[in-house]
Image (cartoon, rainbow, N blue to C red):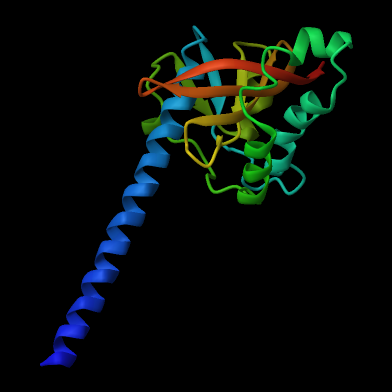
Length: 192
């Protein structure tokens, strides 16, 4: 009898653990979806590259954090600090950046899906189709967001291209009153 009760308790514990993990993943997925859609609201018409950086061995989560680390290492009397970093440097603390760097060693989202996108002016295309669309409407590509430990702040990498020119950088978001809001960004480079 006691053995049966213990066995039932173990099964119940495992079931509760699975439900808890699944609900945590659901929250993260909902937040990720909301962040992508907050950024997509800024565009009238855009092509979103379906593939994230999941299969890119040279582009890891630390690549997203590096511009923010640069902001903290920049001298306050420089033009770069005054123009690029001053407004965003304290949104995510250095401690939070370090925690994110420890947590995110690889990517978990391989592709964006049609169901992720709420803006009907956004069309998903594949990386292999870029050349066909390069001279038309803007192309963007996102990393998946990296979240702080409390899941109230996030950083996402965005690459933007139009007419063979563009740039890339990070966007910094905060969850305020249950909604994700862009609080700033740091450019990381240009292309052309």
